[in-house]
Amino acid sequence: MRIFNQINDLQSVLQAERKRTRSIGFVPTMGALHEGHLELMRRAKAENELLVASVFVNPIQFNNSIDLEKYPRNLQDDIRLLESVACDVLFNPSVEEMYPEPVTTQYSFGSLEEVMEGAFRPGHFNGVAVVVHKLFEIVQPDKAYFGEKDFQQLAIIRELVRQYSLPVDIVACPTIREADGLAMSSRNQRLLPAERVIAPKIYQILKKGASLRNVLSPKEMRIWVRTQLEKIDGCMIDYVEVADDIELQPIEHWNQSTGARLFVALFLGQVRLIDNIRIF
Image (cartoon, rainbow, N blue to C red; front, side, top):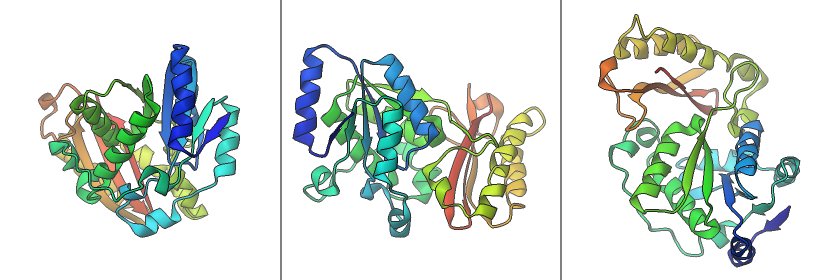
């Protein structure tokens, strides 16, 4: 695996690969890699001739300085895992390399960025869009791979690609879960042992809630899920939402949409977790 810290060095190598007409699959990450990331990379590796990954903790998408400070970082572990899936190229830039000047770019994603994560994390999706747009310009991948656990982020990135006519296919990949159902996340490393034991209840409640579609309205499902989550020790809920799976707007009747998902964001102790599940 070749590792690059400088944009120019990376682009020189990738330009040479493109001249050989090699397709590029790209998986952008913030490191602290886990099996969920590796599944994205395995798929990218299978569908492309060159796998490029990035590890960059993007400071401008954190609206909580403590969260940024505590975000897990272990580059040597990440390199070992990348090598285990035969990653070809790692891009690991510094903040100064990515943002040599203050970032002033502002994107507009309309109602997509006004609900759920957008409402609770002001500026978060603008920071995501800035870094993803820049990474796409640097790497110029044919396909880029993202997990459905961050479903709203996936929708924002698709809208970014649409607005700017970016020549990259966005590939959505299913959420990868631990054996007990907890959605894999780098933040899981920060859970205390007792919190890790009870964290799988989140997914159990989501699954049960989604299964009640035929007996509950969307509003009743929200209330039922929230009531169950509130029984978890140390749980503080940001939101429980039932929304369509395209515009991510709340729905009040099942016939409002051809597809719907159940979303949740909550704190378990000091760690903020998100998850979602398809209803239909």
